Length: 170
Image (cartoon, rainbow, N blue to C red; front, side, top):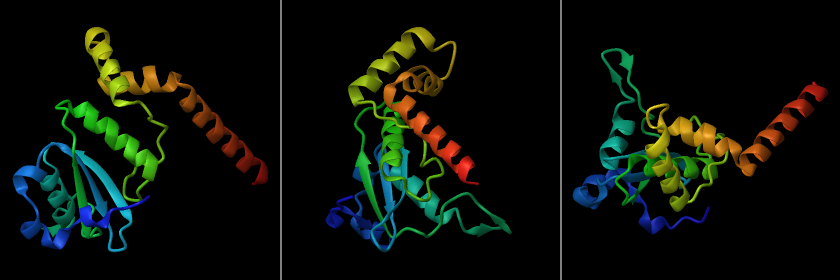
């Protein structure tokens, strides 16, 4: 991954370097460690608030460890997603996770998710028109769209072959 370090914001200097109005609009955020390695990809309607949650909610509160990834990142980057539909942000989040497989994202090895913006908008409108009462939108996209695409079929076939080869050598 080619990284433009000038676009990264040091987390320790967030208060002095960030325009809170501009950077807290809906979008994706990328968290990097001290060595500029991508460690986490997320999406939020308020990215700066969510990044703060990740950082501070991992501390101990009244003897319990709260949810959060903690102070393992030093830099951040926020990309705005202009579409107001949260499903578009989630679509891009999943694509970036699949592409870079950051270590902190738990679902980094999910199946390919290579729909374009135009395709995902089309499938969402089909979902809204025909399947909204029957199932959640992500079930429709994952089970009725993605699993029927050739790249998903190839991906599953390759995973199955790897499992079978591993069994033979064990």
